[in-house]
Length: 347
Image (tube, rainbow, N blue to C red; front, top):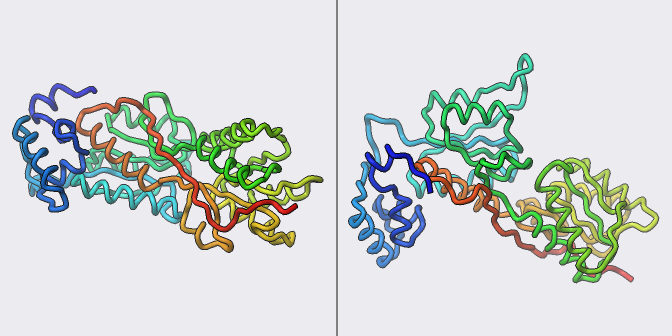
């Protein structure tokens, strides 16, 4: 753990230190400090004793002379279900930590060949204490800006592998690919295809690697024509599914690496007169609300987006308090949610 000398000398122990001493989470310790009622009596006693023992200075929750303690959440778009789950997770964790959150949508347009900084400049004006990014990736100039301004930040579900010293939170994508494929194998499928996102995307390559690993463990050959890459969008997945169905020996099941892409696979199957799951089993990835609304309801791998966002916020709070997480990459478990889009193959 790394802590700046000025923080430890002038502010005393941080809430993270108190939480560790009491054997509780930082949000739980924050609830005790802020007088919240939803804490068990025994837990409250342990935290209170740790506060007194360590000499923690209880700061007033509001200070009229200072603006609220702010963190920024920068997302690619505010229109997707993924962003909604991230917002929910950040909001709950920020409430427990006594923080205010400002949400911004990042623009990728350039002016004169230079990235538009927009939201970066606003961070300085607002005096934000830290930033959460739910973007595919940051540019070198953005990383340099954050380093120059010594702004703590954490990436949520980055699509491209960040520099080795950047803190990020993601999902166990490889294991998710294994789980999806094993589910189809257990149903009796042997002709299993995969429709993935771009090869350079970290999550996409990990999910395909998990698919390949499960096939290898089952002793099945890996067919190159059963692996199709594209974008994480419905229209591309629709085209890739049509290509798979045009093969002399089309698959009886397909693992589609996002729920949105699975909608494209559904559409292609319907156009060919195929019934899901009787003629084709489909597994998605994400467990977005859309996966429950499809007909039939989509079997999918749940990616815990809200939990990932909350975990990132808690890591950011520790960094804002002068600490450094033990590792730079945190992965949360995925799990299969079985619904109606998968069944045994027809013989």
